Image (cartoon, rainbow, N blue to C red; front, side):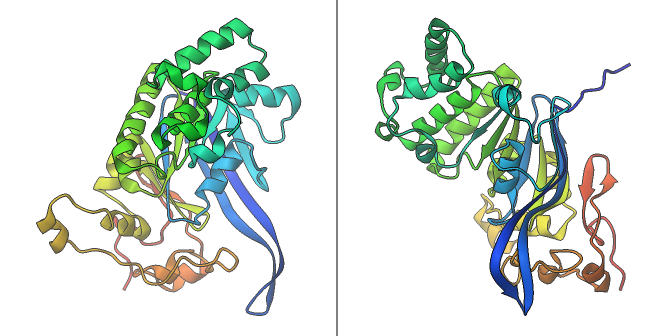
Length: 333
């Protein structure tokens, strides 16, 4: 009998609203904007769960809810089976050891007046590790992320962008966490540097068994590093599938549009492809469309799409889609 693997991270019904003052849409008073609307998923040990979508879709807000940087309005986040929403004090210290984040801008996330060895040691000292153990661990971390030893005495501004992000990753793994949320970790880096950082993340995962929630807008990057991918649109997940299934058999119209925008290596194929160009801009979260939030840009939209919100339902093993007319089904005419 195969032993069931329990998720190391479970996100259940997360909603995040931000208060809005003095706003009115078409004469209607708006008190709050809902950045994240009932998002649920789970991540297994050692898995990379990709989260992708346009800017403004709520994916970074969701990441900050997961790591407790902002408190969700509703929902649960479970780490190793224990709800961590609302925990404080010593319990929060335990959560911080096992749940870390790497930010998009490595320079802004590193203290400008601390040397690299101080930055790497800070979390371990707060965890009350012995001084000699901290000193040895700092040396290990610098070697682990493949930086020269003399980096330890430098300030963040003296390093390149790729080196700074490696420091951010080293800091995140310093206490051997179970989960790391990676919020656009390579989008601020040159393309030539991105591959090295992505390969580092993959190697660390293989060696340390860490689970990742990888947030990005670049589907090519997400495809390279993720085992499963969730596509997010205006605060909601519209499709979840394994990386292989999502690219081979996308079901949601929004997923189809995102995939069609990925450049092809073959110039002839690029010229002859049928690119899906979405009409209009991303709607404002202050006044999202009724029913299906994608309907205002969807070529499949029908009357039901404006009145009924599609549930995220399973259409094949491990693949779920929130659409009344997914690609696997023929819409009514």
